[in-house]
Length: 203
Image (cartoon, rainbow, N blue to C red; front, side, top):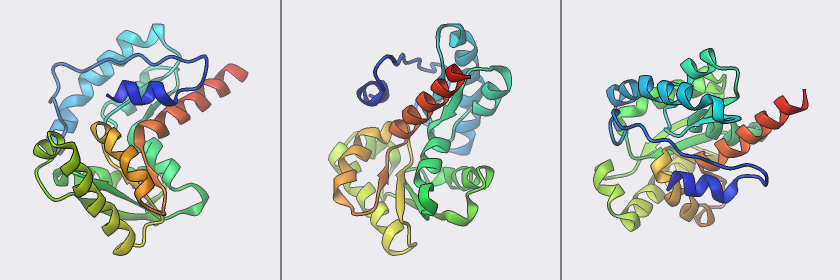
């Protein structure tokens, strides 16, 4: 699903090839799962690096991204950092709507690391168990809509990120429902990696 979304928005002349971590947790819903995923994500990036022009880490906590950037000269982005940079454009205040309350501290750390702490309004969580919501797209969309509304009405967010790669389809559905920008992380990461690849090629 994430590859399909990326392919639908990628610029002409580029292709998207997916690689799935098989040893890591199937869904990252806690800080422990996020940390457990990082080594395999780094391994995949290193193994595939010779055959690509750039790398996207498609998990919202960007597991393994720091190690990938340190090890490779290729452009590499995470969907978490890309979404936050996009949300903060033009000085906007932004929040995150997602399904994983056990990741709150990890999500809070991202804007801090990106120098965006003053623009971050916080994270709101969809009501219901993350894994159960994923099995019911209509319920997922409704629950996330409630979290987006809370970001806007209660926290003053001027843009809201849908915080999760597997939430990509829901992000698309939510965008027309709100007057503030609803930021889709996969789309943000694709746009950013293309810019970085083109900038590198132009040097």
